[in-house]
Image (cartoon, rainbow, N blue to C red; front, top):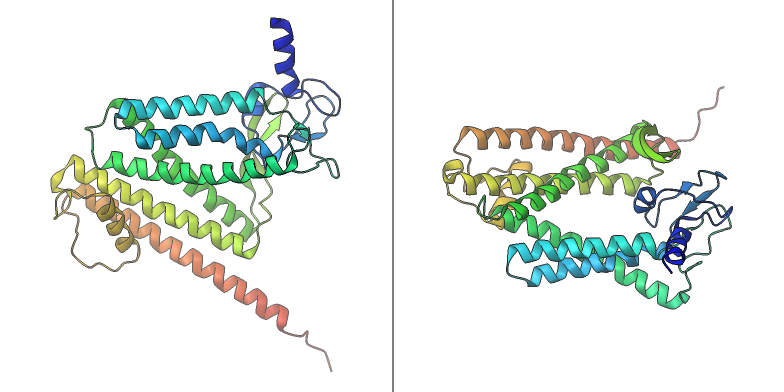
Length: 313
């Protein structure tokens, strides 16, 4: 029975073309619904089916349950349990599918699920994932309002989420910049049995996509600095002239600083707080110049397309 169980699990990493073990479990764990890789034996393109996002439902349930729980330790345990369950579902229950031209049959292909059920599950999983991400942003703001009073495990988890925010800022900005200026971008690509960082071609973004990536990166930057202000005010009550900042006040002050409005109702009072504010002002100026250059570049391209070529006499 054990041998049959192991054999059935190994089928989840078998290539749908040649039947060989296409990748390691770690490589499959990194596959998402929109990513693909190549079989390490036959070299053909394979990936996880689109409905793999259903595997995120246990994590979303864990995050929602943690929101309902009161004890911080219980919240962490619920999130970790949801993450482990999602990992098990993704690794041991989701097969690989063909990804070459004409081979992919869409949502529910090679899954044993009905097309309607798969599409409903796909939609629910997407919604639950979005809710989970929003809750994660709220969670870290609530932790920041408590300063160092939260348990070490909660602070560690909040630190990971905070690091993820800045990684998201960098990734979005790199994708938009590389597409706009035709630069290569760093990305994880399969190399044999593992993934390595390499410079690859920019993402094929539309104009709206470039603007959207830039605005999302800017919004996360403002939120990241807002969290920093909240935490600074909790650690040092003299960091700002109004004392400790709550979640709304921290993000509000970050937005006002980024917009260079300067109402004066909240002001930094210590050297560290002033240094963080100066960093945000400099970054906001760079973002403003970058966004104006995007709009100006698109306007220039449209003008050049609409101008008829000059004819010689």
